[in-house]
Length: 131
Image (tube, rainbow, N blue to C red):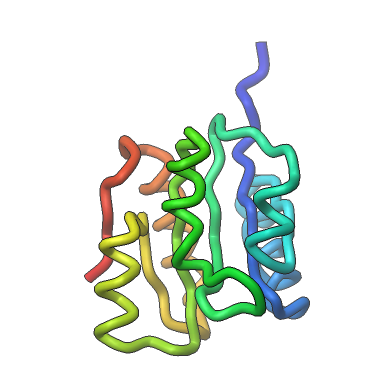
């Protein structure tokens, strides 16, 4: 029996960022799916098994910071790693309180993001690596 492929759900309003992250995770033999905002992601049927979300924070519509709470409210268990160009201590604190599995300032180091994805997939839900 084949193992379930690792699915990485990329939520970002910038097409170039979505494309870059998709290339990155594909290079690590993971399967990317891209979404332009939180609402599009939440209304698309996706599997929680062997999956992780990489989400921007500041986007039109709902903030990426709302995503962990919305997933939890829906009974979903997906680790969420945040990326942002607007890195402040307050944003990091809010991300950690929201249950972030990771937090990166853009531009993101590709290997560090892949390492965070692998770490997030290996940990139980609600374990954070926000520093």
